Image 1 (tube, helix red, strand yellow):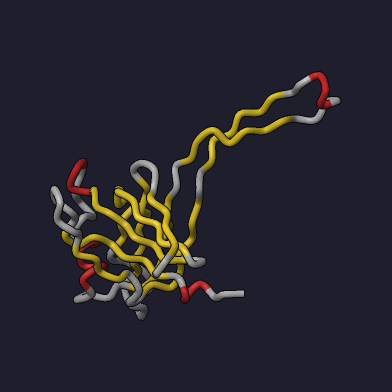
Image 2 (spheres, one colour):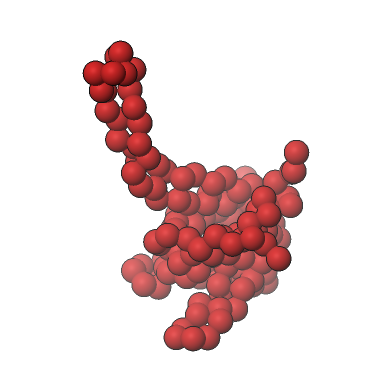
Length: 143
């Protein structure tokens, strides 16, 4: 069993333009939790030969990562995401790279639900965001 901390998340703090490579910044300082949700869309059918039991087909998904932690001012990834808190539209778009379970997953994304301050009086400011995939990710073996 692998603990969650062996997973790696990178955000493109300078997204790729044309044929240029993105500048990846690791999103780990201050990060306490990461939850992946595939948000699958399903179609359900009841066929005569199913004897009353459904047949299900996954027909789509809207993958996202929910990130939670503590604000770490000066960290390139967190500063980039925090800078999107009041932006809209294309200004919220970037790219994400995840390395987990021996796979590398790369996808265009939109950064939403950004929280870069707040919390209890004696705590470090909270930090959270939702990274939503924009399109089908490229999945390869991690090197």
